[in-house]
Length: 546
Image (cartoon, rainbow, N blue to C red; front, side, top):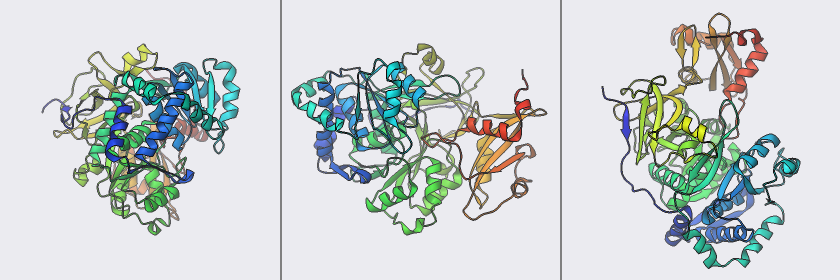
């Protein structure tokens, strides 16, 4: 057996330019093609029109005194203004700080202060999020924020008007002064403990990751990409917006926050060829009782990513949604975000059972989590990656950076994986998700995949809960198909004889939804906390272990 190290292809070549210059190149090639379509704002722009708006915003920011390297916070669901700020800050070398739209006061205060934001762009409110109220509540504790722009007020027009005092030549000179290795984006990524860490990404990091993601989907300037995933996360702003601008594809933004009906309506109305989503989004779309009423015949490809992708869901997406070339991507914010992806040309089997191979110009290996030794193909260990896509570091936190990126430049993911002889990677779980039941190491992913095969199960999430005898035992949270009725005994009977006895869930809970992050990731920590309280396991949870 050979050591599990894989090196991606050396084509296509990496882009050695800034996001701004790349956008200008796209405008010169595809200026009259549609760039941005936002049905909920009645916005439809060509690349030339989109770029003109971006320039007005960029000049407005320059007129405000925003300099290269200054941090500009963006706090909002998916609106066109988010995209304009994304590209405008890149053109003037400001560092955009993505603020999670689900953040509340303490989290907002932390992000603004830790990043050193001078300016915050936001809305006054959206649904239950009273953004202006929260901004005003933390204003005394965020002295570095000099100005706030509420883009759903006259503030936005005032920003555009201010830009008239800045010449096109001044904007061009600013752009020419930038380096593609400059930091351009800070994204806060939550760990299981402590404060969020600000992953800091450069033009080179995210522009090239976007390009290679688009290449794996075989996107061209004729593709129309439906992007229901949030912009504040790499999935939306890099794999979505930047991947479109790098190729000249059209960005279609179906709704401010995820709405399965709005997604399928936009796919139909805009004849989208590509659709993105985390697994829970695709499950919701497939679960619409009238999904057959939508014309999805234009779909060809897309990406499912963000959390482990159930094999059965992938098969349904291919069969029911016409996405014959759908791909799976895997990565993390710290890797811009994608490090492995299946190709549209890969076999269906590879596309439903693996997360693909490492991207071009990058490396991947599997290591022993205890010793750091590189393992052989087929062995299970921690996934590590190295290359152009690895972040510059965590903003203003050298200690956390050194814990994540070793001296040789390898980013340690914290994910358990295997890699076969052909370089295809399979993620089997999180190092910290692993359940240890009486000495047996159990990975939730394996049990979840099995439960998905039950015809009445729509979704399943497996966690470990404390147990005085075994240390931990298994609990399954299960969503059923509409109209289906199952009992706990039905599930256990289904498992009996098909998976090892120690993998059969001891506790089963039927739910209509899971606690989620705004990006659609299931919050297993919250599930565990709820389970401990509801099952009365507090005493077992206090049991100390060596």
